[in-house]
Image 1 (cartoon, helix red, strand yellow):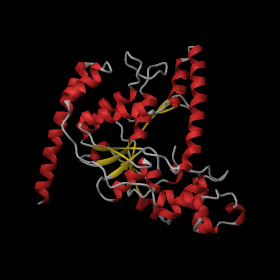
Image 2 (cartoon, rainbow, N blue to C red):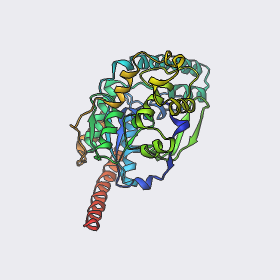
Image 3 (cartoon, rainbow, N blue to C red):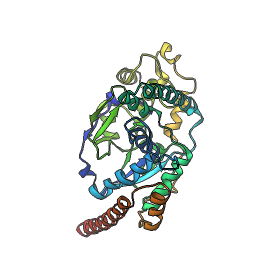
Image 4 (cartoon, rainbow, N blue to C red):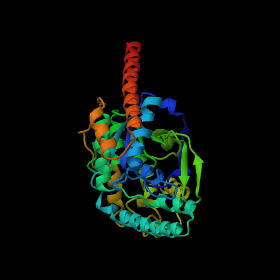
Length: 344
C-alpha cells in the first residue's frame, strides 16, 4: 500500500509524450498487481487460458506495456521485489486478510448476479504468486525488455538506480520511492488514462504525474530525513502510525519539532519502539549494483510458443506485437543516434 503522502504531494501533470526516450525503473510487482486487478472479465474473474492459468498480467505486459514503448518511446526497466524486511510481515498479513474479505464479498455478489458489484470486489482480491512472477519474467525476457531482481524492496532499488542516474525516474503508484531517495517519481504511466475506484464502482480519469523530491522538500521546508519521520507518524508498510495523525498534521508536527526524537512526550510514547529501525530501512535499504538496463531483440519463436501454444493467445495479435516491437526498437535506436549527433 505504501505511505499516504497524497495530501502534501507537490506534483506536475505531464503528458506521456514528455517521457519520450526516458528510462523508468518500474516497480514491477506494483504494475503486475494493477494488471491482475483490472484486466478481468465482466464478472470479476481474471483472464485464464484453457488450462486454468491466470493470464491477466501477461496480457497487460504484452499489449499495454509494449504500446508505451512503441507509441511513446518510453523505456521501462522492471524491478521485482526481493525478500521483504521482517517488519513488513504485519502489513503482508493485513493485506491477506483484506483479500479474503473481498473474495467472500465477490462470491456473494456473484450468487446474486450483481456483476457490477462483483467486479468492484474482485479488483481487491488480486494475489501475485511466485508462478505469476516467473511467467512475467519469462515474458519480459522473450520481449527483450530488461528486468532486475532487487535484494529487498523494489522501490528502494528503483530509487537507487535513479539516484545513480542510470534511469531518469522511478515509476510506481506508491510514494515510497521518494522516502528511499528517488530524485524523481513518475506515477500513472498508463495509456488507458483511467483508474478504477472499487469503493465507488467507477473509474476516474488520470494524467501522468511527475514528483521531484527536491521540489517537494523545498516547498515544505523539510529534509528527506524529516519526510521519513513524517511518514512514520502517518504509518508505513512497517508501522501503523499514530491514530488521528494524517499527512497534514504530521507535516505540521515535524516542521514544529524537527524530528520524532523531539516530539512531546505524549506523542513520542505512541511511536513504535523500533522507529529508528524503520528510519534505517528507508535511509540504508538493501540494494544492488548488479542490474541490467539494455534492451535486446525479441525472441520471436519463443514468444509465439509461450503466448500462443502455452497460454492460448491469438497468433495474429502476437505477430502484430512482434512487428510493433521490431519497429519500435529501430525507431528508438534512430532517435537516440540523432540526439547523440546533435549533442556533439
